[in-house]
Image (cartoon, rainbow, N blue to C red):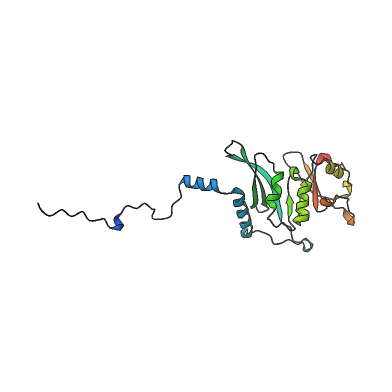
Length: 227
């Protein structure tokens, strides 16, 4: 017998099969899905909401109304996310705050067994709203919300007042609206609304409740006196 046959030479490392991509590549769908499932949605919304405003090229500076500068504005509204459902089959509902330039600076998910009212405070808790005008619909025309904005956040607000606040609604109906200048009118697809500033001309004061004195009232036309 002759000498044993030597084993074939090993392939150079450069010729070995590659298991890693040679350049950037998108992660697999399963990887993206698992990561998103483990992310705290409220924490992610808070992080993005605090990061975006500083990068808004149209963001106005701190408003000082005595100098005539326009105040910043923030619109709060809730929407049900179309096509998104929880594991129990319920639809996902979000409450969000958006600037006049279209940036969503705050957002929270409303639990299936909760409502938007319970999410209003935690959504705005970490935001600087000094001298900002916050708008919202009739659902959020709550005393607790008004106190949060005026007493804690040093902000202003525009409230839509309907029969869900019967005492305040009745109080506003009894105010001398004929003495209040109409500063704007809004028409939508629903019943037309009138917007009135809650301050009287010539230095006269309208006797609003304390928490209402830094807000504006927006009342459906049918609830304002004619004339």
